[in-house]
Length: 323
Image 1 (tube, rainbow, N blue to C red):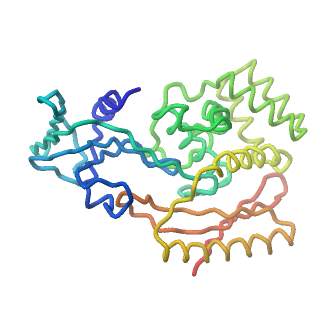
Image 2: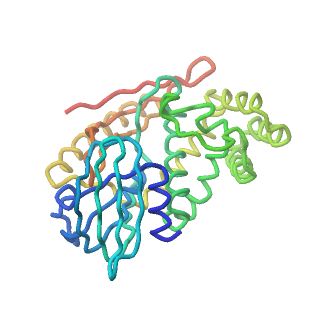
Image 3: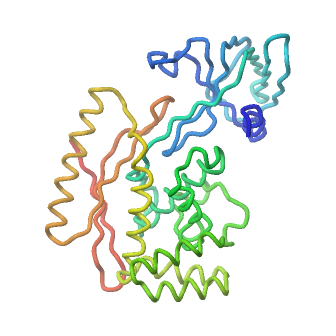
């Protein structure tokens, strides 16, 4: 998909969030003050923008506008022109530009966590990471995904692990996909491979049964098995594979001083994790972070997620590490 097709797709979804040069921190290297960025996709895996090069803007643009828009673009001599009307505010902005380029910044998201919903938090975090991987793959294609991510993205089509069974966010924030209850052949193949790798014969049998009878009731039964102590190895393997696949990407940087403070928090969290593991408790260090290029309401938070054996099910305890 070329950049103009991306622009059409974005505008058809009523998405139009500009980052003007003074907002992107023209302090960054290789940032041209005549460039205007349009947010294309921003999540924990990626910050991507359509960049209007050598741009000039006229008219009025409302930054906090969230209503319907009407847009058109055309060739104007040596330039392109994009005209956008924010209908409810009756504001019109025109951007004249020479070329339209895609800018992508990929990040490590293997240890990202957002504890928006309680209960089985480890599975909800897994669902969240799979979902943001799917977003990256769907909107920007396989070119921005490594080989392992291209395999793991199939788990978005495995209902026992997607938002149908373990949503990370409340219902009103879920962006529905077509037929989320229908599993893919790739998802079945990958899940069978992982169950076999850890020697979980029961999960293997259930996956074969689910492949034969791909109904929601069977998906829910498998989803229940995934939070049992007996099948923790399968879930842990998926988690580790995601972490390893994403570890090739850099962590976000927020400046030398802030990165130093974050490093101290993460160091405390690692020490806490070591204490727990010496006591026989499986633990993970996770964190929540803001975007680097756009305004964001999130602060940096560090957590230790403890996974304990219950009578039948795994118990999850979240501990936030403070300064």
